[in-house]
Length: 312
Image (cartoon, rainbow, N blue to C red; front, side, top):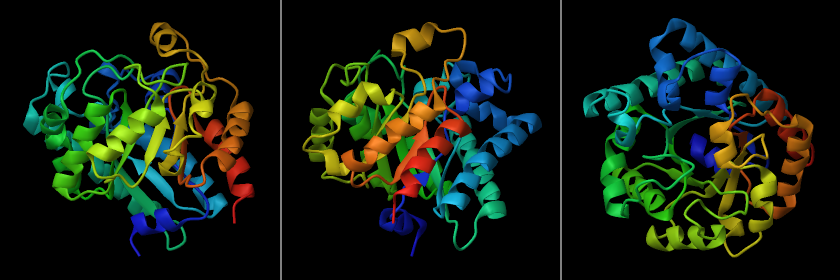
């Protein structure tokens, strides 16, 4: 049974990590140009910080008797951001290969028969994750994301996940690139405080559009980078059974407010866990729980405590 098979068959949701970039900036003091965490891989101190970060989360999986979803530090490692980061296509491919190599090496030191660790190749938006700055067609998005997706696949990632997608065409493009590369994939959308995508589209409508355009190729869908209070009321709809992951923000602030913030808003970790407890009834197919901006080990630990205690 593959790691993907074990995830899909699991009776308890697997933890993933939380707000890596915000933690590295505000807790560890690193400078991440354009919010690009892959720069940590070129710094021994950065690699050590990444290792410590993931160490805390795998302990949650061990205590909960689940597997662990290990993200690559590649949210900004796509061609949409290459120019701003001074990289060409060859460098983007190298960054993604290095990120998978780091993740696999870390996995080799922690995985056991009872604790499978799935290397998740993270694909971020080609523009601002909070604002639809330059909407592309699905075809253009597929071509733009292809170098990263192909590099993640060639390096041996188990899964590709499109994270913080704010309009449907880009998510469709990533799905098609993943299909082309023969990669299992998950698609994660973000929403504003009203539960709609930054494009203005209703969450359920957006998921249904992606499902139709991709022939349901995704293993499942997720919601990330928004507080549970922003989207919980939008989960109970026709696509509810296809939502398999939640990686929420710790903060109740809007995307615009988060962009302008100079201090980290880490919300309330205990409240975060209580919010996640409600997902047990809302989302029967919940398979991944983690965090996004402002969240850390405390938040995911609280979510795990609520969801693992009541699972078979």
